[in-house]
Length: 111
Image (cartoon, rainbow, N blue to C red; front, side, top):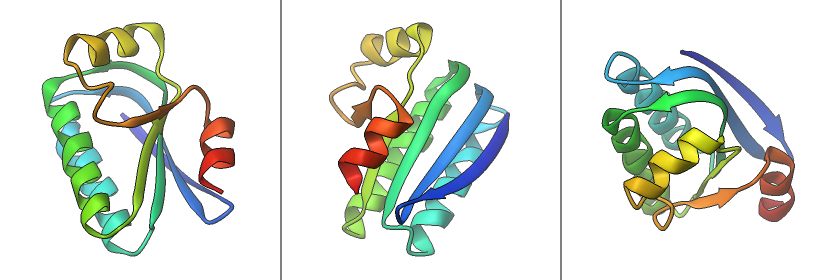
């Protein structure tokens, strides 16, 4: 798993590549919560380059979302591929997150 961080209009975009599984979920979650804890009030996680996300990855997203909520921040996802979207649907996670179709849409809506 690779993690890249970008800024756009005071929005932090975290781009993930590869797999979010039991081996990488802890690092992924710590990255998200540290950004939120450091005052990044608006955060978008771009999942367009994710091929798989496990239950540990979903947990990391839920923890980060809760952390953002507690600090009155905004936490959103974007770019879910067909397979990742299917996993979100199976686990009923689509109702728990704000999900945009693209990074551009997310930045526009949060700006």
